Each structure stands twice: as structure tokens, then as C-alpha cells.
Amino acid sequence: MTILATEGLTRSFPRVTALDRLTVTVGPGVTGLVGANGAGKSTLIKILLGLLPPSAGSAQVLGMDVTVQGAEIRRVVGYMPEHDCLPPDLSATEFTVHMARMSGLPRTAARERAADVLRHVGLYEERYRPMGGYSTGMKQRVKLAQALVHDPRLVFLDEPTNGLDPQGRDEMLALIRRIGAEFGISVLVTSHLLGELERICDHVIVIDGGRLLRSSAIGEFTQTTQSVTVEVEEGQELLAARLAELGETVTAAGRALLLQVRAPETYDVLRDAVCDLDLCLVRVEQGRQRIEDVFKEPADV
Ligand SMILES: Nc1ncnc2c1ncn2[C@@H]1O[C@H](COP(=O)(O)OP(=O)(O)OP(=O)(O)O)[C@@H](O)[C@H]1O
Image 1 (tube, rainbow, N blue to C red):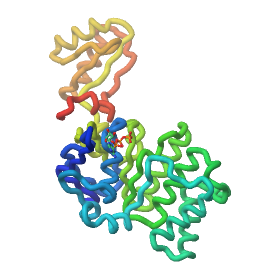
Image 2 (image 1 turned 180 degrees about the horizontal axis):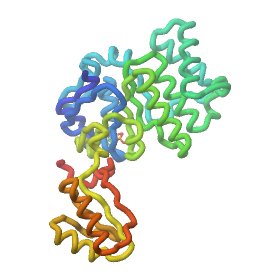
Image 3 (image 1 turned 60 degrees about the vertical axis):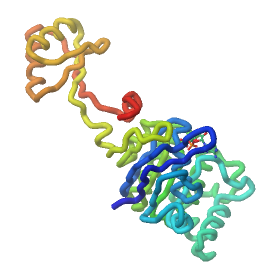
Image 4 (image 1 turned 180 degrees about the vertical axis):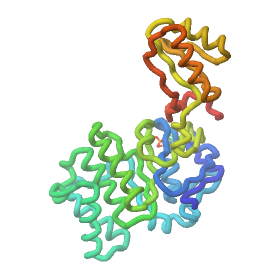
């Protein structure tokens, strides 16, 4: 099932091309949209909500065309914007009820629904206080609550962990995971911090300069690569020479060796070589490709 899809999506501003022929497909679950500041993440979200017209290309959200069905899309999609947008004199309850009413819920249902979502995001007694006095973490929670209040099928969360301390960040990430897992709402979440999305996403899209760098299931990003890092207390060069003699591919990587695993027997060869040379093995670690590595690859990959 396709949640959203873009085809050659381009958005130009007078001085910059914010999105450059972006073609991508997103399925259900939690999808991370990663890119450095200015990569085009917010521009993409605004186009997907039908708030900003594309310069070229097309995009569909839940099967609806963003250029003509923006209002219908916004009825079933929640949006947590990046920047602070909360009226300081209103309480979280007043604001969230208002947003529920704006989305068409009757008064009583709006109150009940607002109380529910504020509880889900972890705002209790403080929800009756004016939001001007809230911490960044509390403000982010209210922004999340209003995105969920009309019971959307999909939510766009723009940098929800921005400005949070490590604990606040962990709590927000756990909340996002719950939205996807427990409530069955699909999530598109942006971040410029790559590592944090590894923990909560099923799928990650990486963009840079408005162009797609990579779109893959999370398992493919962090899949085990065919190499192991080997560290010995002393005799690293001896070991490298012996492994090479035995037909293995090995390179020095600082205080360790990087050994290509051509077959399971490579591990036997390593064990025997270490024993024969009477070396003290400190570490054998499987190489894992991290999301960060995507940015080290050439831009046209
Ligand atoms: N309304 C606009 N007018 C002119 N340029 C814009 C406009 N909106 C965005 N841009 C430019 O488009 C590029 C992409 O911006 P965008 O906000 O989509 O990036 P982003 O990945 O969300 O980054 P950030 O996390 O910093 O918001 C940037 O160079 C930005 O300056």
C-alpha cells in the first residue's frame, strides 16, 4: 500500500532549488526523512499538505493529488510544524480543543478528544496553564497533540525533537514510535540528526540539496556488511601478513584490521592465524553500515 508518492517533484525559489526532481514512494509505518538544514524537508511537507504548489512534477498523499485536493488531504493528515506557533495566552487544552473544533468536531467530542490526546502525549495538570510559560518539551508535546486531535490516518512531524534535551528527545521518540505502532497512524518524521531515526523508523529517506540520496528499509541501512574489525594486543602486522598469505583480504584501519568475510570459513582462518601466532585477541566486531555513512557516499548513489 502506498501512503505517499512523488514523481519528479521540483520546487524552485528565486535563489535556490529546494526540491530537485524528487521521486520517492512511502508505505505504511514510521518513515524518517533525513537531511541537513536546508535539504528541502519542510518544503516537501508543505507541498504534500497542499500548502505550497510544486514548480514541476507531481505528488499524491493517500491517493489524492496535492495540487487539487489539499483540503481533503489536510482533513486526514496531521501536521506538527517545525517552528513555535502556539499562542502564549492560551492553555494547551483551549488550543487543542480549538484545533479539534477547526477540524469539524462538535464541542463535546472536541473536548473529550483533546483531553485524550493531551494525556497520550504526557501533559496532565499543566495543560490548564497558559502555554507562554511552557518548556520547549511541553510545547513540542502540544504541537504533537494538535496534529493528532482529528484522528488522522497519517501525520507529518517536522523536526519534533528540535531543542529538546537528551531525556526529552528520548521521550518524544518513544511517543512517535507509539503513534505508529499502537495507534496504527503512519508517520513521516523529519530530522537532521540521523542516528535518532535509526531507533524508531521502519524506512528512511535521505535527501540532500533537494535530491534523493537514498530510500531504504531501516534494515538495509544498518545491515551487516561483509567485513569484521579485528584488534589484537600486539602483532597486528604479523596477523595481517598471515591472513593475506592465507588468501584473505585485509587492510589496516588505525589500531585494528578490517577483514573481508568472503565465506564463513574466514572466521576459522582468523581463529587459526591468531592461535598459530600466539596473539592476544582484543576484539572481533561485525561492521555495520550506519545512516551517517550514506552522506559519505558520492551524491549520485
Ligand atoms: N519561501 C521561501 N523562499 C525562498 N527560499 C526558500 C523558501 N522556503 C525555503 N527556501 C529555501 O529552500 C531550501 C530548503 O528549505 P527547507 O526549509 O525545505 O529545508 P529543511 O530541510 O526543512 O531545513 P530546515 O531544517 O533548516 O528547515 C533552503 O535553501 C531554504 O532557504
